[in-house]
Length: 193
Image (cartoon, rainbow, N blue to C red):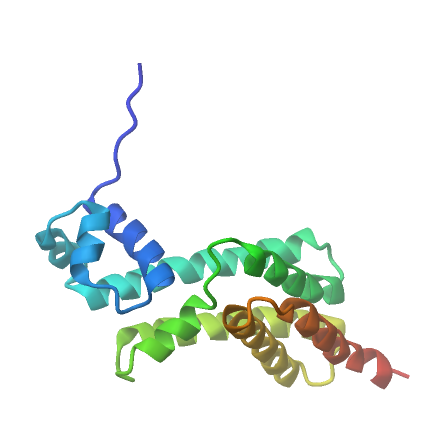
């Protein structure tokens, strides 16, 4: 008979905080986090130095998972850069349709954490730079004449679709964003001789 080891306090805190900061926002109380993780207050301070450290680690974990999802989505779409980029918007529609969807975790964190020096902002900025890099790479492969600017536009469409879906749940922002993304991508085809 095998027994399954229960995750330790650090992992339980991360799991609880990842779930609760998304579903209830960054303002979720420490007591609620501790109760959901079934850990003592001491564990929070030992492993993360406090709630701010926990939030930073949750965002690091979430960004790694989401970046991996971008990569897998693009890989599954094949080798054509246009298909790979449009697949991102198809995946957005899937994300938005999930029953626990609450918008963009990173936008919510940036808006909720008013202190511009909060270390969480560095994590969200770095994540956006990495996603921008993924998009720019595909746009360069596509032969877009201004890949960096087009990546800015696509990232804006992604952020906008996630925000619109959270604030207007009966809308279909992922499909609208996909149509606009196709226009940005097709700029390459119109310019080529």
